[in-house]
Amino acid sequence: MKHPIRLAAVAAVALAGVAALVVPPLARSQVQVQATPVYLPIGVASAGNASMVWFHEPSSGRLLACQASAGAGGAVSPIQCASAKMP
Image (cartoon, rainbow, N blue to C red; front, side):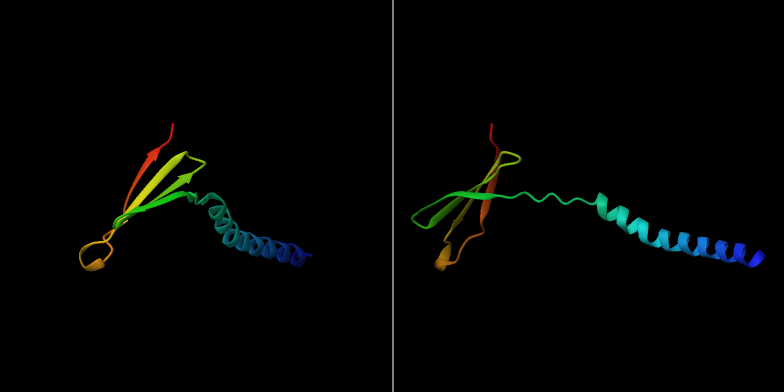
């Protein structure tokens, strides 16, 4: 008569061990939220050796403007960007 109780106790401990291994990773994965902004292109322009592009991020109302220009020997200089919040 003690064997069914002992078997139930072993099964309960094994189930608790499996739950301890499975539940914490699931809980962590639900907490980790990555909010990556989605910038939509809204315009481009170029003049001489410089080019400009504008992006808009609708959820935050931010505007991003980036400019690239040709440097010495036709090499592209580093792209410079500025961001601002639209009213």
